[in-house]
Image (cartoon, rainbow, N blue to C red; front, side, top):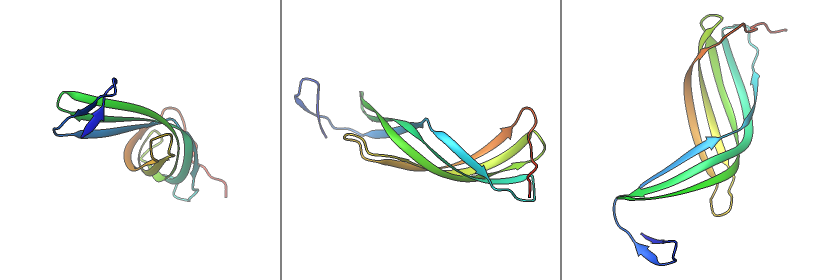
Length: 130
């Protein structure tokens, strides 16, 4: 591959390349829990939006190139939580992140699936009105 350094001179570098991208979203989320009669199981749908901070890194040999970007992103999400007792539960959720194109960076998207353990302090209200 050919890269241009700070002085503007083309440089040809060869070797094994490692490319990584890290996406850090900072998003506001609205979550709606679907009311069902079995109170321990709580499915939900959610949506969020806000800035996403993206770091792209290219490593080969002793050389590393890093570029940081800020994009505007949004996501839909669906999942559930299951409560074993009033303070401890487990959950699973799937999320699709989409960050809009900005400058020379194309749109970025990814899918994440999370399995989590929930430990809640204080009380929680499991009652629903019908």
